[in-house]
Structures are given as structure tokens and as C-alpha cells.
Image 1: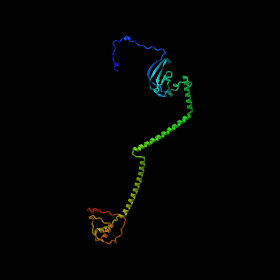
Image 2: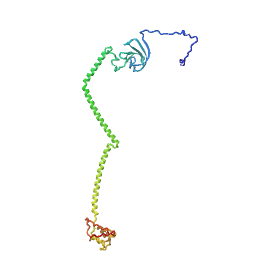
Image 3: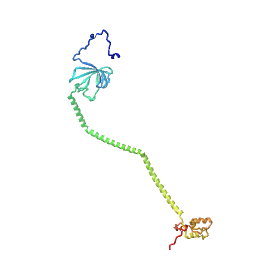
Image 4: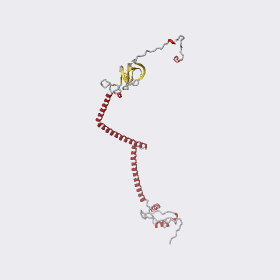
Length: 313
């Protein structure tokens, strides 16, 4: 490998450069095709007719390019390529087609169908002849007319279909809006921490609490009313007459004398009755108690404090 890069080479002593002549290849004839080995990619997908192997577009091959001087289209050179099948090594030949700006297969393979190039790959009009430009235009016009006629026939059907589609879209939009609004309500309820079911249960609970509170208030009001009435009947005070009060103060009945200066209040009839029963005195001659309300006379507390009021003449 290193000898390939050396600058000086060995020449023997008896080397004579004049003895080395230049060899020239014979000139080829004018109509002889020129052949070159090139590296190319398959311009279309194809299937081998010998073994049925499929070769996709863009696959790389080592091909022989043949250039024939007599094959031209409007002074554009036509090139022919020879490749081998990747499975059975059968020879496949295809060439350029400047007229249709494409390639055509000559031998060994069959080109796969290209729907967007209809009329170019087959290249015939049903009679085995090439399709001319006028025939192609006629065919396209005929296809367009047929399509227009079918559209006119199906105008009402298309209108009905469009109406059904519009109704369906409106129904879908309404359903979608309803679902979105419901989801928004659910999200709002969840964010506030209140579920719909819990809200209903809490509402019923609040109503029951309010009803129970009203019942308790009514019962309490009735109890207080009855208690107040009973207390008024049992604890009604009876004021002593002035004569009995004076006798009790002077001590004329032989009982203990009580002075107002000592601050002792006169006893009620019920208290006097209880004291007499305890002392063994006879209470049969006392009048029966009365529950009639009697207004008390205001007492003069100035005498207790030693204040003498001047009498106004």
C-alpha cells in the first residue's frame, strides 16, 4: 500500500524509454453505441417478469448506460440503461422518454401502476397505438362532461345530504355545549367543595333543623307560659292590713314587740300561720287566706335613718 504513494520509482539500468510505445485504441464507428458504467437509482417501482421480485423506486444499481447517436427526440439524446434483478440477476432494460418526460421499460420487467400518470405509462388508446395530444384532450373533455352530468343528476341528493349533515352538526354542537356546561358546573361544585348530592342532603338537613328548632321554641314558650301561670297562683303575696301591722309593732297582743328601727319586716299571713302552729296556738279563729292582690302602702324609710320631715302646713 505504501508503494502507491512514493514519488520516485525504480528503473532498471537497461531501461530504454524509446522502446515503450503508446498504445491507442481503434476509433469506433460513427454509429457504434457508447457504453459507460454508472451508478443510478431506479426511477420507478417495477416487478421482474422472470421471478416476480418487486423493486421499489430509488433503489440503487450499477448500470450500463448506452448512448446511441441515432436515437434522438427533437435533438434530445435518448439514453438506455441495463440493470440486473436483485433476486434472479435477470437483465432489465429501460430508457428515457423525453416526449412524455418519463421513462419506459423495454425488457425484463413490468412497471407498477401510477394512477397520477394514466395514459403515460401505458401509452395506448386501446388499439395498441400511442395516444396523441388531440386524443388525450378529447378523453379529458369527455371525462369532465361525464362528471358534470353526474353532478347534475345528483344535485338533489347532494342537497339532501348537505341538509342532513348540517342537522347532524347542529345536534352534535348542541350536545357538546350541554356536555361542556355540565362539566363546568361539576368543576365549579368540586372547586367549592360541595357535591350536588351533598347539597341536596344538606338542604334537607337544614329544613329538618329549622323545623326542629321551631318545635323546640314552641315547646319552650308553652312551658314558660304554664310555669309563669303556676308561679303566679302559688307565690302571690298578700299584704297585711294596717291595723294588724300596728298591733304587731306595739306588742298589745302579748307577743314580742318589734320596732321599725331594727329593720324587721312584718311577716305575711302564711308565715304567721306557720309560726302559730309551731308555738301551739290555736289558728281556727283566723280568717281563711285570700288570694286577692292588694296594693301595698309605701313605707316611710326616713324614720329608720333618723330623718325627720317637716310637715307642710
